[in-house]
Length: 135
Image (cartoon, rainbow, N blue to C red):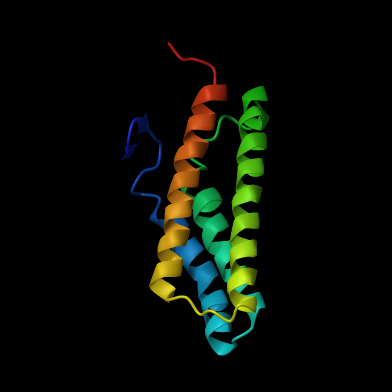
């Protein structure tokens, strides 16, 4: 089992198939982004890079059981928090596009990766708080 700072997670290295699916989903978006200089493909790629790793790879193993009452107690604040993160990403992308500032790709991807991991750790904390105590 993997470990994330103080929280024991259920993510296992055998979940490489999810990684492949997330990466393969990003390839057409990356191609579209490289083909045009419009804001739309850039925005969609950033939204995908924030959402897909979090909900597609990192969190599914740690969700409470779907039929339990704790699932929606955890998911409601996680979805709200994720919506705020996406709003910030959209606002920053549009701000830099209208200011005609082209940020380095590594810097943008670094900020997105940092946002995903911070959001992941906060989501784990939310799941731990609303889940019933075991033992």
